[in-house]
Length: 135
Image (cartoon, rainbow, N blue to C red; front, side, top):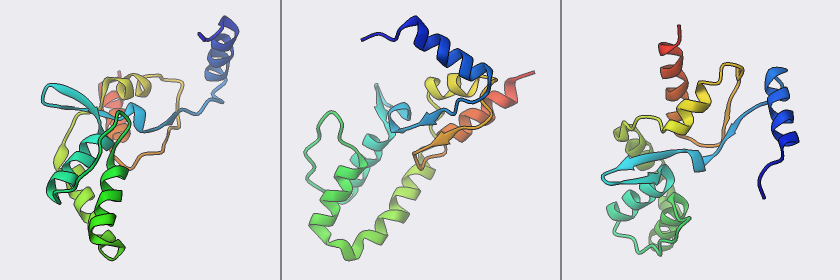
């Protein structure tokens, strides 16, 4: 069901009053991987699965959590600590530009505070890039 005109008026009013806080979740965090645009969670999951030769049943919403589950099933929870470094290294090596959705969100001048539920640096990078290009 499409949002009503009243809904958008409320949103714009809250934005004008600076009482609106954008919350960014993993659905906005996508990266380019070859010919496809994929969620960062999915890409990291695929890379963890490939690194440890894990059997993961990939579905449309599968991601890093599925690969971590497969890792724990295959190797046990005693090796779970290893994944923190591996995932951190994968994120560090990625060097992906922020997706356009995050850049557009960062470009809304009336937002002065953002909340991200993800662990990646892409929102912070988008905000920095937008601030660097604004007059």
